[in-house]
Length: 435
Image 1: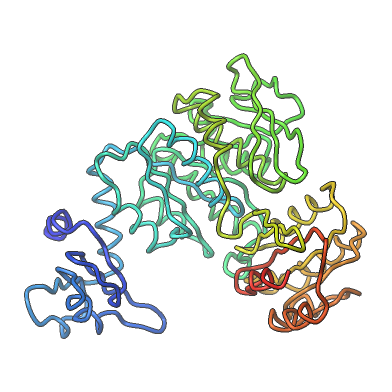
Image 2: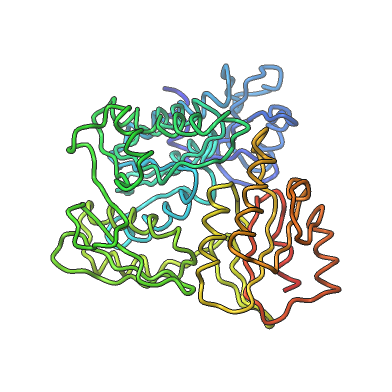
C-alpha cells in the first residue's frame, strides 16, 4: 500500500492547510462549505510533505497523491494501520456520558498501561480515523469514542476501528431529528454490539439497563463469556462482576464499589451528579478486567478532574455553579435537573438552554422539561432559546444567550447554587462570567 508507506515516513496527519506542520501528510477533505483540494498547495507551503487530494487538476508535482476519495482513503489508511498493531481497542458509544466515561477509563488504565484515547469529541467519521492514526506500537490499549446522529454511522466507525471490546454507556432521546425515533437511537448504538457479536469479541454491559440487555440479546450476545457485567445497586455485595452504590452526592459523587475482591472500597470523585455513577462503574469494570487493583482504580478515578464544561463545579466570588453546557438532550437534561433537586444546597437557580436536533419531537420534549421543573417545585428558573419560549410555562424566558446576558448584568445573582445546562449551540457557557 503506497499511501501507508508514505504515512510511515510521515506519521503526522494534517487536515487544516492553515496550520504549520513540518513533514505532515495533508488530507484535502471536503465539507458543505469548503473544498480543501484548493488549499493543498497552501498546506505544502506551510510545511506538509505530501498532500492527498481527489481532484487531479490541483496536482502540480510529485508531492500530490491523487486518490478516488480523500475521506475514504483516510478511513482505509486508519483501518489498515490499526490492523498492523497489537493494541487492544475499546470502542465506546452511547447517548450520554460516553466522553466522560472514556476519560474515566483512561484515567484508570493509565495507572498501568500506555493508553491512547480520543481527544475531545473527535468521535465521528473523520475524528475516529485521525485518532487511530496516532496509534504507535508502544500503545497497549486505545479507547476510541464513537458518536453518531444518523443510522449506520456506528457500523462504519466499528469497521474502521475494529474494536476488541465494546461498551455502550446508555441509550436515550438525542439526535431524534437524524435517528427518527428512540428505536432508531437503539438500533444505531447497537451496531457496536453487532460488530462485537460478529467477531466473537467482548462487551462491558450495565446489566441494570433493560435497553442495553435487550440490544445485546438481539445482537446475539447471549453467551456470558462475551459479557462482563456491572450494575448500580443498593447491595454492593452483588454477584455482578462489578457493583456499586451511591453513598453521597452533595455535591460531589461518592461511591462504594465491589469488584468481588472481598473488599468494598470508597471512591470520592470530583464529579457532580448521581448520573455519573454508572460511568464510574464502567471504568471500574474495565480497570478490574485489565488487572488493576482496587487501589489503582480508586486512585485513577479520584484524581480525575472534569473539564470542558461537563459536570463541573465552578466557584465564583458570588456563586457556586454546576456547569454542564457541553451538550443536552431530554435524557441528560432530566437527569441533571433531578440530581439538582436532591442536592442539599440552598438558593437553587437553574439556567437552561434549548435541546437541539430533536426535530418534530422538540416541542413535546421541551414541554416535558418544563413540566418536570414544576413537579420538582423549582422557582428560580431561566429558560434560554426559541424552543423553550414556545412552551407553556411561567418562568423567565429569553430568545438567546445575548438577552439573558443583558438581564443578568442588570439583575445580578448572588449567593446562589446555579445549574447551567443546554445544548452547545446555545452557548450558555457565556453566562459564567456574569455569575
